[in-house]
Amino acid sequence: MSGYVGDLSAKQEKALQQFREEAADFLGADKSDYACLRWLRARNLDVQHATNMIKKHHAWRRQHNVDKILTDHKSKPFLKKHLIGGCCGFNKQGGPVWIYPLAGLNFKDALRAVSTADILQEMAYRSEVSIKLMREQSTKLGRNVETHTYVIDFAGFSMMQALQSDALGVMTGYLKIYEANYPERMEEAFIINAPPLFAAFFNLLKPFLTGRTLQKISIFGKDNWKEVLLQRVDKDQLPVQWGGTKTDENGDPRCASLITVATPISEEEIQEARRSKTDGATWVTVEKRSVYNVPVEVPKSGHTLFWEFETEQHDIGFCVVRRSGADIQEEEVVHAWERVEAHVQSQAGSITCDKPGTYVLKFDNTFSSYRSKRLGYVVHVAPPTSDDVTAACLPDLSI
Image 1: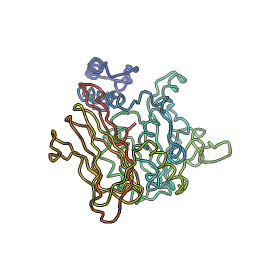
Image 2: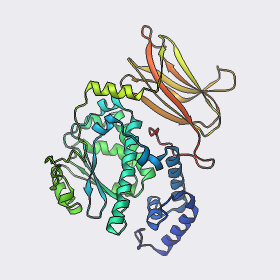
Image 3: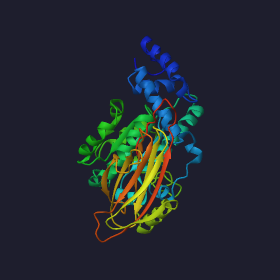
Image 4: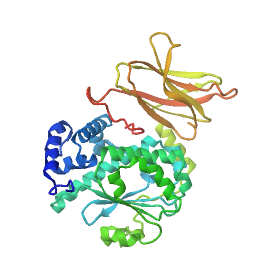
């Protein structure tokens, strides 16, 4: 049996009832069979694993205030203009269709202007928008709509930049968030105009995707994808650029009013975005051959320490240590030292503190004999979301 509503074996029915009882406190407003079975299918109908998954999801939503993201989230102007993709319409099952055209996308410049955390926050917002559209479609059509379709177009995109660590960090970061928190929401994903290097790139992503997700991904080169798309999506719901008949009011075949397409990023836009990010930052000068310490008191175990920083010019060393008692010489490294190009893009991260104490962010300029560094940083500590559930603190979603 498939594990979907209306197609359950006696064993699967039992698992559904058991999961509903064990996960009752974490299901939220939607306690339907459809909702429960999404979590169960994601963990191969294993009740315990599915329950653990939804507990972590519930903690993640509370920690990052995701339940209010549709009303409280304000997209950064830079991301509104430059974060590609958008929903163009609905597939034949009623689910939203999201298209991501990668042509002309410049990850390096984008990440000079905003952090990985900023991008992942915006992508989480889009995921919540898509679920809202599903609920509206369910009401409109009088049947359950719980999945969406992705079309990811690699035409005109440099695969060499996709293989860079920063770009991979964004992509794998979102895959982690999506797989952990939006299980069984994807109907299908179509990778189109995939270049020869795509296979190597995709192999790097596969470890972050479940087997069920991988089965829903179809990969095409330059040919044959339009016919397949039109089997899933009516022409009037698909832009002309991707084989349909839909255009903007001004006749744009890409429907750029619905789907953000990549445009050149100016140096002025980058600097303006960086200035707006650091409005609330503390600015200091790290002298040459010195270390600037930022001590942070963490009162209890389980709290999460978040940071973000950048420099005006030149790189800097960074690590985080925990001091034991009053002796500042006794330091335990909790985030390893690294030399980072914080002048190229802001650096954001977090750790879950397994012990209370004084945690010290160390900004290290000892390797520089001639240059002081202008540093801006933001630090905060967030309490655990509950006493019995450790939040799924996936990286780079510091909402």
